[in-house]
Length: 164
Image (cartoon, rainbow, N blue to C red; front, side, top):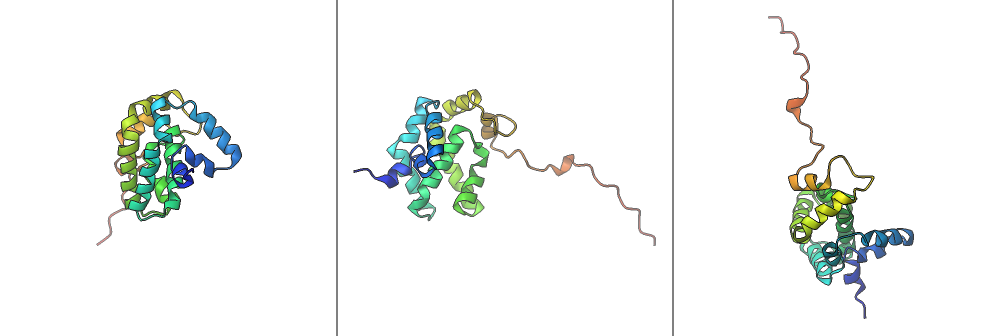
């Protein structure tokens, strides 16, 4: 008997939570993934890890397929690694600090072992919707690209001194 909860908690199993037209496209895209990444995305260990992650962050196991699909989107390069905390926060309604911590765990535990293969895949298969810069560089720098640097801003003119 198939444990559908565990199956949908795998990144490629989470495809079943999408509309059928999108499922075909996503499955077809999975054929281009490196073998090590594909193995990670279909592994029962990955599904169990994602279910455990949901429980550790006091989420229902029904959220595991959502986490799995976010992992898949990042793996495909549709979203950059730096967006992972934001995606988790938005889609799971997690506080920012918890989303940051969960993203760090996912990055280290899931993406860490296949990081080199993923970066090569991202370089060779840039999606058209990608933001500026390469995913590998943005992920490895560990920073967000849209931070306002106030030191580089032109300062407004100083007001005239107040009369005494």
